[in-house]
Length: 151
Image (cartoon, rainbow, N blue to C red; front, side, top):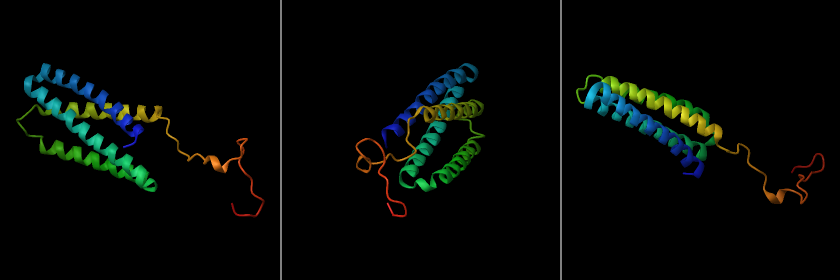
């Protein structure tokens, strides 16, 4: 994992974990222990799904850059369906408060997306490969080739 990828992952995970702590406290205040467990599990699910999606997307960008945009769309749908399946599986559980779980999952997902957007906006990632130093003249100008010749 490149350093900017790890920085993006960290800058998404920290605010989401803070939101999860707040969600656990709110869940405990309104629904007791089961609310705290539900909020903690919802935050955990959101963080795992979103982090794995970010890692897969970054690896795709590195190894198959021509599939990056399509992979982003496929990944978005996969994350959405995975969260829907988790919600469907745990909708009637008595292990934790389902409302606290769902609200924490939603809040953690929104915080992650916001933090990821901010991280990508602040990142200084080159989108054009810089020219190699040997292809430039000493003065910094590009070498020019005669008209009609192949470079």
